[in-house]
Length: 93
Image 1: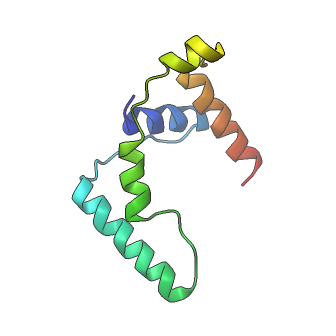
Image 2: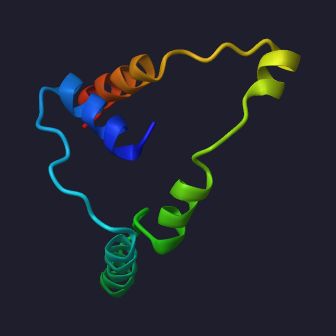
């Protein structure tokens, strides 16, 4: 599932418009770099960093075969998890 699909499902459940633009990776890297520098200067923390962006792409593909086989893990449907996350964020603004 792409990031755009995840955001679209979340937006739909929240009753908000979904993503309307695509930001190319080099532009996102520049935004993350700038955000990190600005937050450093003003003394704030941010999770929007070049490292977090890279990790979001590196950690997107996992093989769950071993967890299913050895631990009996049964993942829930992605849409259900996204809806529950949206509900949680609505309750914890």
